[in-house]
Image (tube, rainbow, N blue to C red; front, side, top):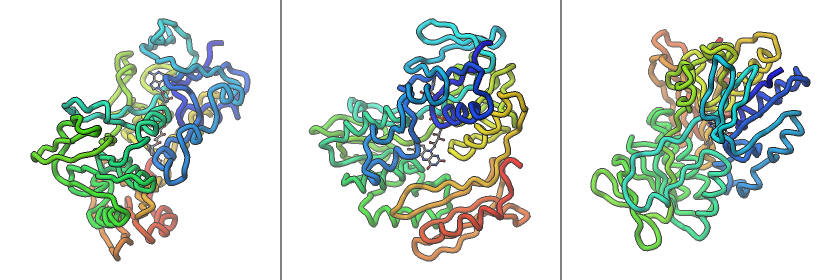
Amino acid sequence: MDPVIIVGTGLAGYNLAKEFRKLNKEQPLTLLTSDDGRNYSKPMLSTGFTKDKTADQLAMADADTMAAQLGAEVRTGVSVSTIDTSAQTLQLDNGETLPYSQLVLAWGAEVFRPPLEGDGLEQVYSVNDLMDYGRFRIALEGKKRVAIVGGGLIGCEFANDLTNGGFEVEVMEPLGRPLPTLLPEQASAAVQQGLEAIGVKFRFGPYVTAVNQADGGVVLSLSDGSAAEADIVVSAIGLRPRIKVAQAAGIDVNRGIKVDRFLRTNAANVYALGDCSEVEGNVMLYVLPLMAGARALAKTLAGTETAVAYGPMPVAIKTPACPVVVAPAPNGVEGTWEVEADGLNVKALFKDAAGTVRGFALTGESTAEKNALAKQLPPLLG
Ligand SMILES: Cc1cc2nc3c(=O)[nH]c(=O)nc-3n(C[C@H](O)[C@H](O)[C@H](O)COP(=O)(O)OP(=O)(O)OC[C@H]3O[C@@H](n4cnc5c(N)ncnc54)[C@H](O)[C@@H]3O)c2cc1C
């Protein structure tokens, strides 16, 4: 029988493979990845300095160890370039064609890069996997000043971690406050205050237009005509689900690869899981939804069709200078924030028109209320 093929060895791909092997030890299983296939937890990439771990120390197992553990073939450094959904085959970038009985796209999200000009772009790094992180850590050696483009979740986590590592950090955020799309203003203010207290600088308003080399470092030009100096730049303005190869294969996509509650695409025997997927309209670039998805999809692949359900899914943001837990409201839910603030401790409830709590944001000591509040939330996908 043709193998089950999982494309991707991130948390989605490897967790699915583990869950599947609990149910089925016989079926040939192949994992394909364009990276080196090491098993690691991506959220740890923004804690390397705080936890004093290099890229290699963050790797939990290499591809061969994973292959042995999973009773699977794990092929590294190969990229899926096309899929023929009627022949049930896929093509690799080396020209090889592989047949599948069932195919799972778990190929993640790609970094969105701003259209920057200048001759300093080689000093602009994005960190979206362990290999990126390894290169970034080497580039940081001997450097002092880090400019972070983007003050969202990843930008703020790196700001905290790099400061803990002894770097001077400046964060550029056009939207005027940290975590602008996740938090209400008072909670952003607490995060700003916490990060500033450890030395992080913020520059709000203008966006970065160019990065040019200067005196061994770089100079960033901003849209209001101002400039900032740094030795190295981290770009953290966002991630987009990878959809191109699926779209070219006639698989329905929207923001992500469209799947139903069974994680099925519109093509027979093709599924999507994790950061690349859009589950009934929900694109959630977090670990908890992909773990729930992996458990359900493993059952489906093993022969028992199982829909995924999402309970409340609060996300802890790793800014120890001001801890944050946020449970974003489901897509499309309108509402208003109700906020109680006491210094760094903010408790904000997001209520819909009927007054029901649909999401929350907690900072500082208020994060202790996470579990109690999560219990009150309706499930994201019941
Ligand atoms: C710095 C950082 C901190 C984070 N912190 C948190 C957190 O605290 N909590 C939380 O819930 N979430 C966090 N996230 C998000 C979380 O890490 C992701 O949601 C999750 O890791 C996504 O896993 P994935 O397997 O879907 O994708 P990925 O880990 O991106 O894996 C994609 C895989 O597909 C492979 N691939 C891609 N294209 C191809 C191709 N064409 N052919 C073959 N292989 C391909 C890649 O090589 C890789 O193996 C964080 C993310 C980052 C970057």
